[in-house]
Every structure is written in structure tokens, then in C-alpha cells.
Image (cartoon, rainbow, N blue to C red; front, top):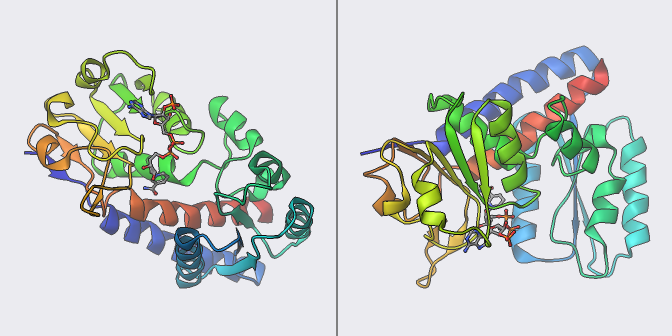
Length: 283
Ligand code: NAP
């Protein structure tokens, strides 16, 4: 029976670390670290996410500011706000909540954020630094997964890792981070042949697909570490991951639940990134 990795508890530890770091930053610089969260439109999930980010920032001693813009905001007006935030010395981190309304090009927006303030780690400069093995701002969800693996004591050097999903937000950066820890990494996606057999080879299995309970218990190698990034609703409306948790638990060495696994780490790592960006700008 696998150990359940408690993302809520580990996320709380990260937030406490950030709180202490933010206090130290404020003592040195005379101001708290600043995080600007930009929301365009009224997407209900995005409204909740951005409010939670602002609230979590304030609780950690970070000056969180939520900029709410109407769905009709033009791309040019949004870019103008980003230029203003880039130039504002009190702002250390900038995050634009996705998805954006259809008339705004997400690439144009992500590219307009100063890479030094890009706390989501989605700017091509930060993606390039990550794939070059150089320090930069790392996307929050995969950074959170790595912290979970570390806290669970999962050995990564030489381990066989399979990441299911190749998005720029999760799958690709996750694979880069595992590679940087000297795991042997395979990235799987919708065109991968015999995914079940591939997953069975994994000492570390990361699921970032967006399909409820797609990864079956029999796909899990005995003793494997299973990190479930998925957040889905099943047919009955229940929140479930990409892994069939009940079926995978007996085989896994350790496994993250949904909810309470990767989810709580994402905001915690956003706060950690904001502190990192602030400290780097102070130097
Ligand atoms: P995404 O951009 O939709 O990417 C999904 C990936 O899964 C794609 O690479 C896709 O392959 C692959 N895929 C789809 N169907 C597949 C199949 N049948 N077999 C193998 N691979 C398949 O999603 P995302 O943004 O990476 O998010 C993935 C999941 O994580 C979602 O449930 C999302 O809600 C969740 N998420 C959670 C957090 C958190 O904080 N916990 C943060 C971000 C995302 P192709 O590239 O070939 O299409």
C-alpha cells in the first residue's frame, strides 16, 4: 500500500518558508515583495483562482494586487498595463490569468511580461533557461511536483520517469526538471503507442493529461512514485485526478491524492517564485 503524499501539509510548509523570507525581504528593502495578478473577464473559475492567489499572497506577507479588467479589454490596453507593471519598482511578480478572451493573443501577452517578473515561468526566456539548465523562474505546478517528490524522499538519479502530457505549462517543464535531476525521462502524449506498457516501466509516473482516472491501477509499476496533476470532474461531478487513485494506491510506493496533492502546491510555489524574483531584483 502506497504512502499518500500530503500536498496540503507540504504546501503549508512552503507558505511558511515564504512568509519568513518575505519578512526578511521587507526588513532589508523597506517594502514587502509585490505580486500583481491580472484577470481579464469574468470566467468563474479564474475569478476564484485569482482571488485565492491574492489572498494567499497577503497571508504570506506579499503585497498582492488583483487587477480586474473587463472582457472587452483590448490587447493593446492589456499590453499597456503590463508595461506599466514591468516598470513599477514595487512589483516583483506579474501573472496574467489564463485563459484570455479570444480576441487577445496569449503569446503576445506572455511575451510582454519582463522575464525577471514572470512568476508563472511561461515566458520563452524562462522556458529557454530551464531547458538550458540555467537558473530562471520555473512554472509553479511542476516546481510543486518536484518539491513533493523531494519531501517524499523519491530517488531521481537514474530513475525511469514517464511524464504523460506535453503542455508548456506542466508536461514539458516537468520533464526538464526531472532531467535536471538525472532521471531518464520519457514524455508521452495523445499519439503515444501503448501508453500502458510505457507507464509500467516508470519508477516516477507523472500524469498531466486532463482525463478523469485515465491512468489505471494496472499501469502502475509496483513501488512507483505517482504524481497526479489532473483536476477533473467525473460523470457524477466529483473532483478526480488523471489517475484511478483507489486502484493505483495498492501498487504505488507513494502517490498524490486529488484534491490535496499537487493542487495546494501550485499557489505555494507561486508565492515562492515571487519571493525569488523579489530577492533577485534586490541584488
Ligand atoms: P493540456 O494543455 O490540455 O495538455 C494535456 C496533455 O495531455 C497534452 O499534451 C495531450 O497530448 C495529452 N493527452 C491528451 N489525451 C491523452 C491521451 N489519451 N493519452 C496520452 N496523453 C494525452 O493540459 P495541461 O494544462 O497540461 O493540464 C493537464 C491537467 O492538469 C488538467 O487536468 C489540468 O486541469 C491540470 N492542471 C492542474 C494544475 C494544478 O495546480 N494541480 C495546474 C495546471 C494544470 P497532445 O499534446 O498530443 O494533445
